[in-house]
Amino acid sequence: MTSRRAFNAKLQNRRAFLQAAGATAAAALAGNLPFAALAQTGAKMKIGTLGSGRVGSAIGGAWVKAGHEVMFSSLDLEADRKLAASLGGGARAGTPREAAAFGSVLLVSVPYAALPGIGRDLGDLIKGKIIIDTSNPIVGRDGEMAVAAREKGAGIASMEFLPGTRIVRAFNAIGAARMGQAAGASERVGMPIAGDDPDAIKVASALVRDVGYEPVLVGTLAAMGKYLIPGTPLAGERSPDEVRKVAATLK
Ligand SMILES: NC(=O)c1ccc[n+]([C@@H]2O[C@H](COP(=O)([O-])OP(=O)(O)OC[C@H]3O[C@@H](n4cnc5c(N)ncnc54)[C@H](OP(=O)(O)O)[C@@H]3O)[C@@H](O)[C@H]2O)c1
Image (cartoon, rainbow, N blue to C red):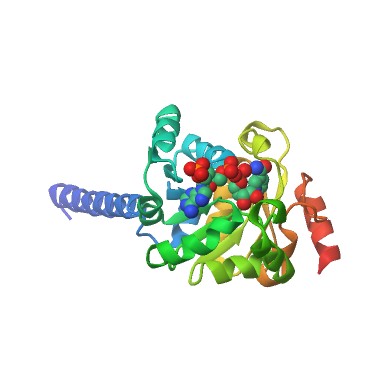
């Protein structure tokens, strides 16, 4: 091959590489990449929060700092606009419908009694999406429906309220005030998570790490979801190894 031909071939290869890289980046930003690919490449994700209270704002804020695009939503759009403006970067605000459409991953962090309504009103938008579910059935706040949810287990109850979604329960039994501080901690706290869908677990694990915790998959929603609420042996903060040891005693 003459040196000019070799040069042209190199140029073509480089153009093809840049086109492919550009397409991959665009697809990732558009939320079109397969979920497992998103988790493996460490790509920036589009995340919608349903609920932007103590937990939603702390975790969503940590994801904004980690470089993700986050749309915050609640029942108060003005408050969400202020929250997004205070965070800057990739933070924005929207209605719950807009946030559900925006995110390839959704953080559902609402009083448990709001879950049936979210499943009904946003069912068309959330089907097939990865949901990180921090919501806990608390009888004093959520009433009778929380009694039933605790009896069957929060993992099963959340699946019933949000059918067709790919739920991972996480962040259920540590204080919201600590969630925004974990990223700077010298030793990683273990975060017990439960889920059924392998891709959802991969993506949720990457996002748990981005907040500063080490995810520990303790089991399926049906088997272990019931332990991911406050007041169980898995509640509170402990090292990843300790989380594994405690989880083993529950199986
Ligand atoms: N606080 C903690 O330390 C902690 C820790 C782990 C897990 N959790 C659990 O995580 C969930 C959230 O807790 P939190 O402390 O963040 O509660 P919170 O401060 O009361 O915030 C709840 C958020 O949900 C929003 N919301 C209510 N109904 C909604 C709906 N239908 N659609 C969209 N957003 C809705 C609220 O909006 P408005 O403000 O506009 O009403 C608010 O932004 C709860 O289930 C809680 O048990 C809490």
